[in-house]
Length: 123
Image (cartoon, rainbow, N blue to C red):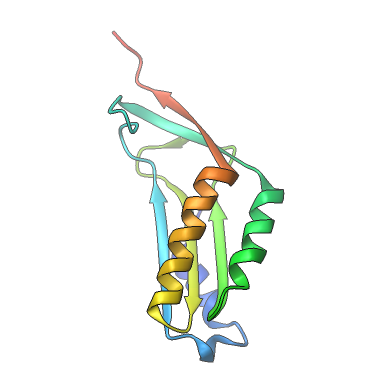
């Protein structure tokens, strides 16, 4: 189970947290339809861990970033409303944190995760 509150507590315990001026979180959940509008009952997420580690290293080294945490519910049959992914980014100023979260989220979705959607059976 993804716990954004626990991820934020962990970030706040980071030794360099005093340099942070912003903590930003993303909590992705399973929605009831695919991007093309077909109804789904849920999904299963698959993760390329090697690429995830590379991205974490790259994005943690960005200017002003204090820490990044990511949690992904993988290889589980998730249903509508379940948490899929949590990302928490702490950094110095808004521009650095927003840019980092957006770039990392897009990269993870494009390069790290793949999903199998479970569609509602047709009658």
